[in-house]
Image (cartoon, rainbow, N blue to C red; front, side, top):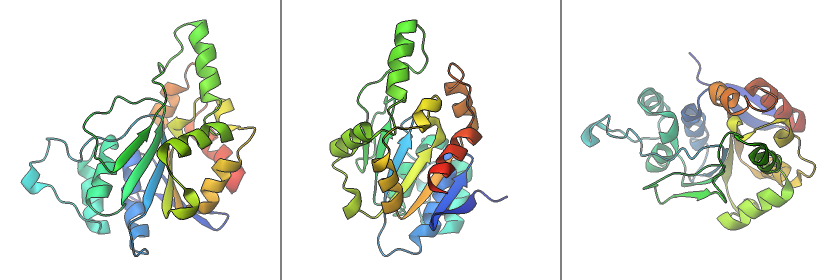
Length: 228
């Protein structure tokens, strides 16, 4: 079974996977074309930063390699939140910068930088919280929010070789995918080496159940309208 679908948006390779850790395969394929490992800039609701393989596989049996065959085998053994650590330790990527909405990470690989400004509850339990969440999620592609994230990360897109990685559960509510000022987001698309998109249908459904109940296909289509 193919782990990804490859599309071309404005002459840019866009790889679409179902589960986030499956991006490892397109990352490894793109790595074959490059002299040096790229950075990954990830937009994700969660921080997928656990150590690869956890304690499920003894250290002496863990394999780290950027060859596509090794990566395919590793995907079967990895959980969704372990791919960044694996990619760094396998020299598929040099480091990762992660813009997230929640952050409860501990003992993170030092080559992963998490940008998270406040851990808001994921679901609106009161009318007041709903208003606050609606305002926050509605800004996640806006210029001011992304500029703040880039500045905090000390990430300069014009000076970096990077992959733009988007988990569709980053988008909560229709407003989040319909920015009024999106020049920075579009600049990230234009400057990146390639794009990977994770559908993560279950998480998108769960996180959007209190809003317009938008699904992953809707958010993918809205992204494609911007760049396709």
